[in-house]
Length: 169
Image 1: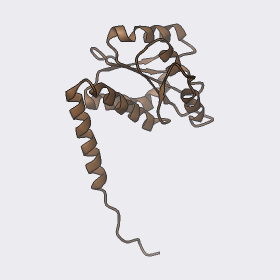
Image 2: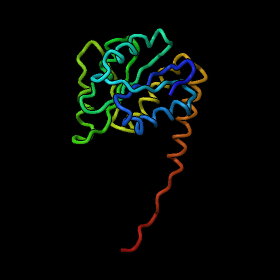
Image 3: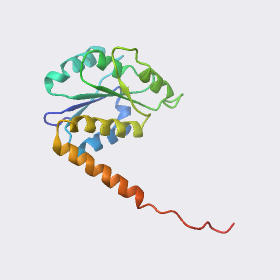
């Protein structure tokens, strides 16, 4: 998926990550943030992943998001080749439910930072919202959209009601 002048590179280690990362893309669309989504593997396409990261800034990108499962080295590989902020979203995995992905991402050695989010859809959503917040620092219209989103989110929570009585047992 490509948009004109993408500001964000949404990079997945496998196309099987798309059902989760689609919520990240949908969040960007909600805010009008241009992005491109790509499948690049730290292990199967290392040269392409390194090239993508090393040319991202010159192509106008502002943030990269790396989503991967298992060994989960994609975000770190991207971060090694760019000075852009790199965010990581761990994907759920078959045997360890994404804990392996989370630990591989969050344990980056000092010197090449990667901001890591929650496993799965919550992480994908929050990575997008964090990206929007970073971009909003230099974009007043985007800052207003984010403020409006936060107000709507608050109103939605405050409008919730719970039953005042429990059914008879």
